[in-house]
Length: 141
Image (cartoon, rainbow, N blue to C red):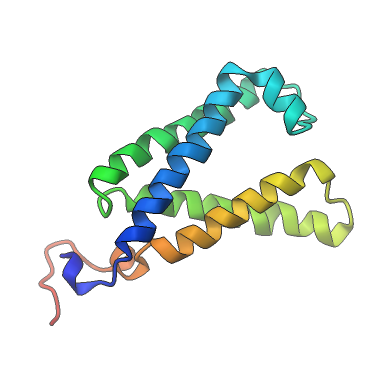
């Protein structure tokens, strides 16, 4: 099935590894070392439930990306979901704050990190494969 689509296998696997290390590691830090993460990143919110949800989601991305190393195309939706929410965050949160002149300094590292994921996911995700009609349809030569 993948022979009909251009798949950048190296980028795909790199993005799974990057997600495991960065998102999974950051999530573990949030869950187990909340105070350290808050102080290092100058996190202004002191809401343990929301903070824990964010950490759990990042750990889940990391764990699902481990499965992506075994079956890269099968788990592309993980990278696609990651790509979508980060783009939405940029255009729905960061851009309005920048336009209003209220962009907080503590968000700079997160914005830069998210930008690296967006660029990496753009390069790795085989979008033609993701959006192809595959349910019982014969492939076109």
